[in-house]
Amino acid sequence: MATLNSNQSINTRFSMAPNIRIRHIIPILLYAFVQFFPLLISGVRPEWITPLSTGLWFAIGFSLTIVISFFLLWPDLKLYKQQGIQSNLNDTVKWIGLGILMQYGLVIVANLIETAISGDLVGSQNTEQIADIVRLVPVMTLSVVLLGPIMEEILFRHILFGNLSARFGFWIAFAVSSLLFALIHGDNKILVYVAMSFAFTVAYAKTRRLIVPIAIHAFNNALVMVVLFLM
Image (tube, rainbow, N blue to C red; front, top):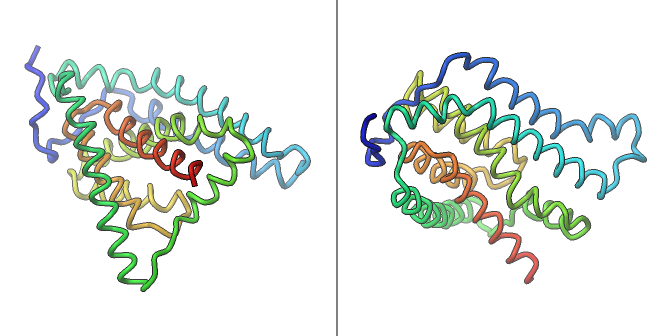
């Protein structure tokens, strides 16, 4: 087996195990079903859509989706280990720390740019909406801090960025996956989400371990929740 190498270039293209299409489409379909089913039901049975039922739906739905997704993606993750391109424990922890620092540095710059363009400091609509929901349904904290980051990193970093990287290289894969990552949040802070995505993507490209962008993403969401509750 090759020596584990976390010093590889971010331009080292990803590779995927066989049967990519079915293994990667199923997590996307499950995510879409969990995410949009409450909207569909609200048009038919609006009385079913309460804050509690929605919170439980997301918590249970994303938990099952994550379990199924990891089972389907295991051949890819095992391949990275066989290829000797996954980081060791020390470098994995190092890149979690570096990723957190990189993310907040880039987010500060992105906020400054957006403030300079708009002439005013604008808050995140998505964050405010999530905060309101979490105050009403505390169980949603689990989805925001843990389940959401896991599911989004599976979809945007591994499936979307990974497949695009295998064909087009780092920068095109990053641009497409990051823009979609920003747009799906339906927020007014697109540049901030792209900046966050850059930190997640670089950390994943350097380590080939999904736990790294998941940990960075979860740390960010947890810190946001703590700040919101303290305020």
